[in-house]
View 1: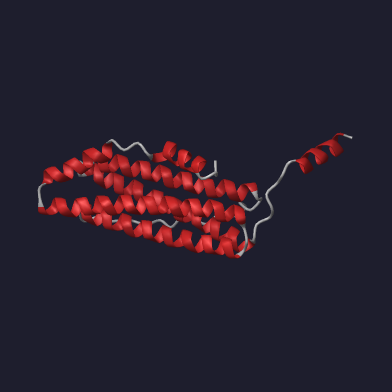
View 2: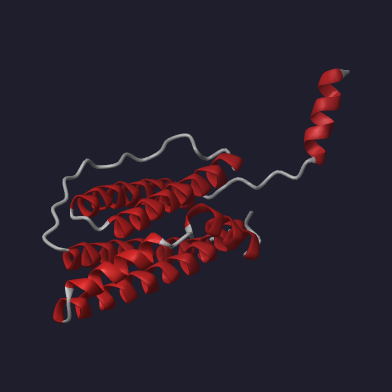
Length: 196
């Protein structure tokens, strides 16, 4: 009798539909991309700290936390659809940075790479009529645009500081030290877009 009650209760709970395997595989790969970005941001933060740009470093550690949060959102999305069985691996890399401008160029390139992946995933979800994945990925696409815009603005400020003075770079560093976005901002944005 108890078994029948449990089966009945589980039928009453709306469960997400099974996922298209192509989308599931692509989302698993994206988890590795997000974690790889977090790894890059942590390495950059360490380089920045060593060069006494602790505001930049703190900002990048926050960005790393955001990327881990993104990876966990994707993982939870897959898990809720019984599709989180095998995840991709992260390549071990060694990064070298020549200057703060080089750092910002690498960040912008990383952001554009992630944005391109997200656009492809969104297109795939829309083509497959996976509404849940489409909503999630549309949110990711909007967040990625915001991140690219922020990095581009910082890069422009860094480039102009080269022609002015080191004081300008320290001003940018101080501005970044006061940023408070990371995970609380991520959760607010998710709620605004109906994801959390």
